[in-house]
Length: 213
Image (cartoon, rainbow, N blue to C red):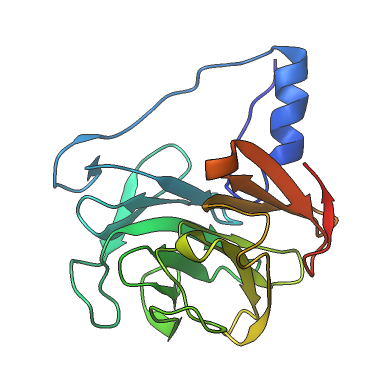
């Protein structure tokens, strides 16, 4: 019987293999509705660190909570607000190989980067249509080389950055993507985008050249 751990950026191959085999093993769950430690109110995303710790986005209470692999509560950070280290509707989380935790905030139109214990490292992004600006971004993913890909939902494009937030490129602004809402990067660097308004998945090379859908 197979076991499966899913992260937003690295799940594609493992998920396909398990779906093909049909072998699923229930191992457990945690969390209830509420505002206490280990409780949640609307959870849109989750990511797993290299050491197995699990980071959960709680949009309802504007925080990140993290646990060990079996669900034991380890800590949390964040509260509602517009200033740095605070959140307004966080919607996505991703972790790179150096265990930096990237959080995309839909209503603050920005990306924040933290240590695993919640110390702020850097912030970038603001509302707008220019390079590096965002409008209601929906998701984030980390490439094998450390670059950060953001589904810039209401700008109808994907933007990508260095791990420090330096703008590298964008594609499909006003083009074939319509409301991209999720993004994942494969081991070969291809970028898969959930194109919500067109009801399809499109995929691209690392610099945005169309491959297929």
